[in-house]
Image (cartoon, rainbow, N blue to C red; front, side, top):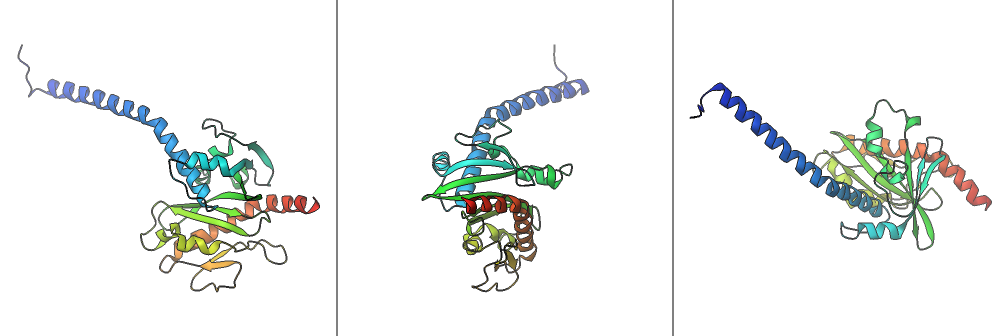
Length: 253
């Protein structure tokens, strides 16, 4: 029986078959690539954390270097209390593993207040000294910005920092991911001589080389610079209780 390719029924059946076939192919591809996507996300996160402590890593050695340098992982609440502690291998499906806390997702969730969010903290052992690393997330000009800041064992002096973005303007706000912007944070302090949290300001113009609490902003990238400034101050504020409580414990010891 000849098939009438110009009929409406033929067009409908053909379209239906194509939708089913293409949908099945896309579903199979998505399921097949899921493990690789999870691995890539884990590797990328490990690389970013390691970058904040000056350890250069790539996808080939990220896992090895992460476990060699990061000794403990914590989840804190907004009061600085430890909710969960993990060490050793990252378990991708364990919701209590601090590594799996999606700070970007929680930051964007309008149903979560500051008190409801989870706050990861990573501890690195570097030449016998414990360095803590905290993730940050905020808003740039065109979209989210994020990063990691490492603090020395005094919970005051910045050991290293790195920042990244999704859609900031190339040559302007996008410069936050470059080392010329993040390196000046090294050695800056987040508490003043009175022990008050002052963060590190990202200032328009010159911050001055002797200013312990400020770095230069990005010329032409004022809104992104302000976003980094706000992100730092807000995040340090959340971890302030943990830093002060544990500094007191260290001093007593």
